[in-house]
Image 1: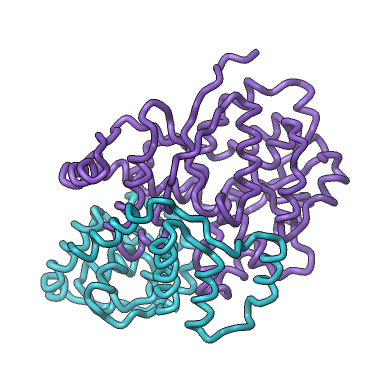
Image 2: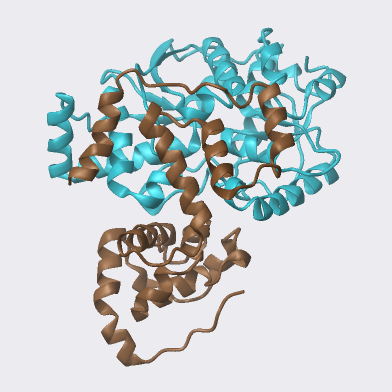
Length: 188
Length: 284
C-alpha cells in the first residue's frame, strides 16, 4: 500500500542536488508534474508498489534520496509507459524509475526487490555468454538462487516438451564484439 | 491492384523470435513472401539489451543496441519484429544521432559510418499498406467465422521521445476485419502483460493474465491475437484457468488468411493448442 508523504520547504532545498542529477540522467523534466495521479490510474502494478508513481516523483523533488532508492516501486516498474501516456504533461516516469534503479545499484543501497535485480543480472549474464538471451538458463539459475525447485516445474516441462524452451542457446558468432560492450563498461 | 514492388528489408528477429517464439518468426517470414517483402536477416545480430540492460545499465543498453544498428545494411530499411526490441533500437538510434562522442566511439570501433537515416520499421508499418494491396477477394473469405479480441499490450505506448511517430491503435482490428474476421470488444487490449515480472513476481502477473483471459472468454472470442512474442508467452505461461482462450500471433493469423499451408510446426509449439478451434471455424 502506498505511504503518506509529508515534507517541508527546507527539505526541497536540501534535496535539489539529487533532483538535478535525476533530471539530468533521465533527461526528464518531472517538475511539470501536477500530482494529478493520472499515472497511478494507468499503472498496471501500482497496487504492488510501496510508493505510487507520482509519489516517486515527489520524493525525488523533495530530495528524499534514501527512501526513493530503497523503494520497491522503482524495480516493480516494467517500463510499459502507460503512466507517461496518461500524464497530461507527458512526464517520462519510466525513464525516471530506471535512472533510479541504476543509481540504487551505484550507491549500493539496500535493494528492495533483490529477486527482480537477480533476474536482470541472470538475463544479462546469458547475453554476456552467448550474445543472446537463453531463457532456460536464466530460469534455472534464478531457481537455484531462490532454492525454489517446484513452483514452475510442470509448466517448464511442458514448455520443453513443446520446444518452447530451447535446451541450447542461440549464439552470436563474433562473441568478442559483444564482450567488448560489456568490457568497455568495466574499463570505463 | 498491386502497386508496391518487391522490396529487400533487413530483418532483426530478436531473442524471442529466434527461440521461444519460432512460430512467430516462421509465420512472419511466410507472410512477407506473400506480400512482396524479401527479409534478409542481419548477420550475427545480438540481443537488443532487453528491459534488463535498460533497467540496470544505460551504457550497456546503448552498446548492445548500437552493434545491431551498425550491422544493418545502409541501403534498406530494418524490420524489428519484437515491439520491445524496436523501442530499444530506436532509442539507441536517437541517442547516437544526438551524442557525438558516443557516435564517434562506435564508428571507430565498428569501422563504419553511423547511418543517421536508417529507417527502423515496426511490423505494423511494413504491413499497413501492403496487406490491402496484396489482398484478393478470395483471401478475404478465409477468416470469416473467426471471432477474436486484439491484444496490443504496452506496444502502442511509447517513451516520450518516440511519441511523434504514427500511432497504430486499431490496426489489428482494421486489417483482420478486412480479412473477414470479427473483432469483439474487451477491456484489456492495451493492458500490460507484466513482461519480466513473470519470473520474479508471478503472483502479480497471474492475477492480471487470469483477469484478461476471463474477460476474453466472456466476449465469446475464439482466440486472443497479439503482435508481441513476450505477451504471447506470458498469456500462455501464467494463465492458471482450467479453460484458457488460445493465443495466436498476429503473423500466424495473417499467414493463414494468405493461404500459407506449412503451418503445422507453429501450433504444436503453443501451450494451448489452437488447432481444434481453428478447424471448427474453417480457418485450417
